[in-house]
Length: 157
Image (cartoon, rainbow, N blue to C red; front, top):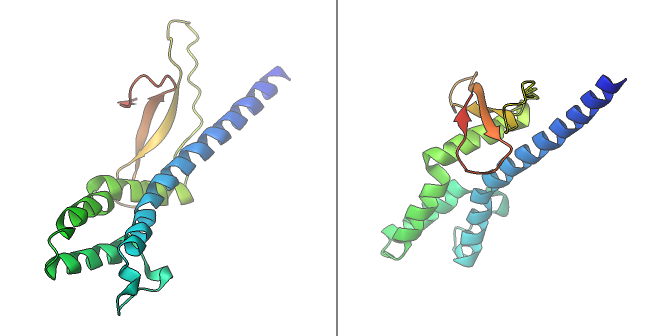
């Protein structure tokens, strides 16, 4: 019975870990849409004759509106356009977008036993699947993420 109790604990722990990682990824992904709404309303773009319906407000359309204002003789929009473009169209955002979409349909965190029976390894880690961002089979080999948060880098396993 002890093995099953341990397995139940392990399964529950992995479920909590998966839920938190997916929630974190989806929260990061939502930042672009949140910023879109913030910029749209704080710059009073909703008062323009061609105002968007609320469901139409997204980062692509808001970026286009900002660029139209910049090109219409408002150079003060240049830095805002550049910064907003960086967080919504850059390589990192494309990766995050693909990872978020994958997390909705497939597991990105898999339970992996990683106990060291020799007793020589101090760290414990989780394995989660990295994402290449391209193609149907875009999940790559697992990446080891140390449970000891000593650095923000992850090393390949």
